Amino acid sequence: MELAQALLSGEYRDLLRGTERIRWTLADRVGRTLSDAAAEPAHMADERAVRVEVQTGRTKPLSWLRAQSVTPKMYWSGRDLDFEAAAVGIADLVEGDGAPDPASLRKRFVTGLAGSDRLARYYGGLRFDPRAEPDNDWTAFGGYRFVLPRFEMIVEDGVSKLVCNLVLPWDAGRADEILEEIEDLSFEPASRGILPEPVSRTDTPEWPGWKDNVERALAAFEEGRLGKVVLARRADFEFDEDLAPAFLAEVLEAATPGCFHFYVEPEEGVAFVGASPERLFRREGREVQSEAVAGTRPRGESETDDAELRDQLLGSAKDLSEHAYVRDSIRQAMGDLCERLNVDERLSEMKLARGRHLVSGVRGTLRKGVTDWDLLVAMHPTPAVGGHPREDALAEIRASEPFDRGWYAGPMGWISADAAEFAVGIRSGLVDGRTLRLFSGAGIVAGSVPEEEWAEIEQKIGDFTRIFGVEPGHVTS
Figure 1: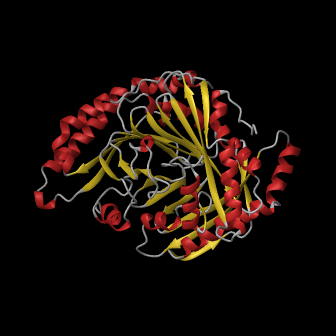
Figure 2 (figure 1 turned 90 degrees about the horizontal axis):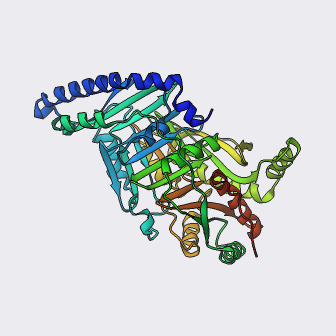
Figure 3 (figure 1 turned 90 degrees about the vertical axis):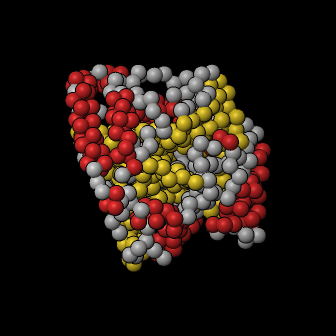
């Protein structure tokens, strides 16, 4: 069904008729909560996050997000669409320019909000490499940024809920402001929108530079200085008008099933958006799961072609070597944090709409006291986006790539007291007005061929370019 028709369907009209009921119910519950908090004795008013929610008629979180005028904006959906959340505004913000300090963040998230609602979620992400010199393009994002949003439109287990997050006692004196924010929420259907066509493309590095980077890495392998390095390219597309980033995210989500979808717009018109197939980790209580993903082939045009490409991937010595680095690294990183760990030794394939990867699952039970920040520090970056050995690979990336990765390939996700989930921020792009900067990488190991790795990246950014009617490019040497 076309988006415009869906937005005007009977279900959405029912929601519009119930708009005032939703507003009144949420405002009433928020007002009561703030009034009760204001009446608390000062010595009992410990800082805590409180969720106030009301069920709504069925809606699409990304469509709701597009209709809102407040920034920042965020969106997250699980790979199986088991959980979707669109969010606007700020109830609480945790950010910094450098690398996050696990000790201070543990104090903030685990101790500082100990009495909070266990479901209160902070959404955000981190730079790929906090030691790299940041470009101005990424200024609004910082080194790391996690937001407890003021409002969320959540769909979970088929139920839609509008949530208002409060941080008490600090919000107790802001009742009028918060109630006005509720009144300003929009339930009008966003217009269908049109994606403009790009008018130019610039690759960084271009083909000669890319070839030199791969050959430099191959020389490092021969010298025994590296085992694997993931090299990335950036493709800048210019348009003759500003892009609507949230609409781009909505179209991208429809075109890339089976992926994690994320969206961060810290200021109007500047947004990081992506569709990643790769989970970094998911935690529920002390149970944690991850996966090793590496090796790439496209999908075939026919069943016969598809089966042949699958067999090529499963039998490729180069791709099996690339995958082994990732799996062994995750085993080592998680092994130090888990009291029990199981790693699939048998590989399988991860099928996507237009591609496939080698994948093996990892499951474990965390040791007592291990936090999400401990997991992030230990696991990121995996050899799937950095390389092996880690520090040597990062040094090679800093020396080779003529651009700042920013949040590309960094952890993207959410954290709550009871659970957390992070994807690896690949297959992603940065929207800034009329510019869309697409980032993608390829794992380079002994035996890699520059032309083939260029083609692999083209296939990966094709998820974006095809929605503009542009097929992936080819080497023009």
